[in-house]
Amino acid sequence: MNLHRKGRAALVLALVAVVAMAFRVSWNALRDIAGAVGADDTAAMLYPFVVDGLMALALIATLVLTGDARRFALRVLGAYTIASLVLNYVHGLVPELHGRTVDWGRLADWDPANWALVLLATSLPVGSIYFGSDLVAKVLHHRPAPTPTTNTNAEESTKTDTKRSTADLPVSTPAPVTPNMTVLPRPVAVGFLKSTLPAKPLPSIAPTPVAPIERRAVAAESTRPRRATGRVPDAAKPTRPKRTPEQLLAEAHKVTADWPDAKVTAEGIRREVRTSPANARMLRDTLLAERAATAAEVA
Image (cartoon, rainbow, N blue to C red; front, side, top):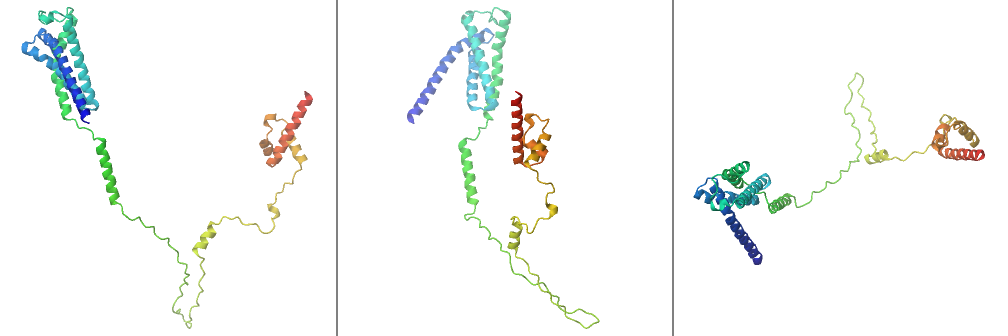
């Protein structure tokens, strides 16, 4: 663990040293560019901090921010990196900038290019004020998202509270209610009817036996078919006489006379002749065999 920490510390120190040396190289070019666009010695010396310093600030912001704020910081970092690269490139192309003998406000011979370079060099400080302030405000108002460890602890706490609030003993299942099978007698009127005739006591009514509830349920749920008793009446018997195979074949010949071979099926014959599926299959085979024999004779 100590070696790992030492390696990380050494890597950070090496990175800081490389960045510092790169800043020193870029500082020389940006200082000369600032002097060429009208900055005095103090402003020219601070100018590199405005450009390259904002790049460092945007890089730190990308490590802290998330979502749209992080994308904004990346755009600022990319824009100022390109601007610094362009100004360093111009400094290398114009030797007069090294000795500060170039005409004031003249960074290129072609006027449109010169105007664009002067606009770029002079707008970077203003942009640094705006973008730098915005990045600092985003970093100060940033709220980091909860870590997975926090969510796990919250879930475990919720589960623990749920377990504590649950009863230790399982909920007892209520015992099934058994219906009272005691047959109670029907109430009998007490007293005598008032009438002009001599009063007579009312005759007692014998109680009607009530079938047990369980037996009724069994009888209602029973689906066993009842066997028919006695002979079937003549009205229920089919009136159509039973046909012989020859009669069925004759009817099949008559029905299928103009049918093609593809239409001669057992289902079609069964529907037209009104016979059983077995007889329909027998008729189909017979008809197809007859048609095949007739075709062979013709051929």
